[in-house]
Length: 74
Image (cartoon, rainbow, N blue to C red):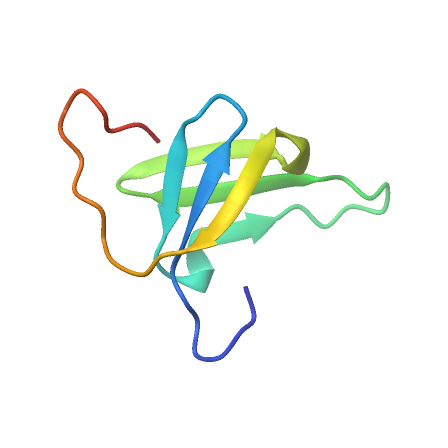
């Protein structure tokens, strides 16, 4: 997330839901001494929170995908 210039990416969760991260400030890690894997995402008007073990993949966003109402999930 500290790459310069920042490259937008898609975060896919284990259940198949996706969040498009368009700016580095849209993700915040929870810095705790116990090594917590919690993070928070603001994407597409939604605020999400999860843990890193729930993320199945990250991919650089090469173009903005178009979703229909039935297939859009975040």
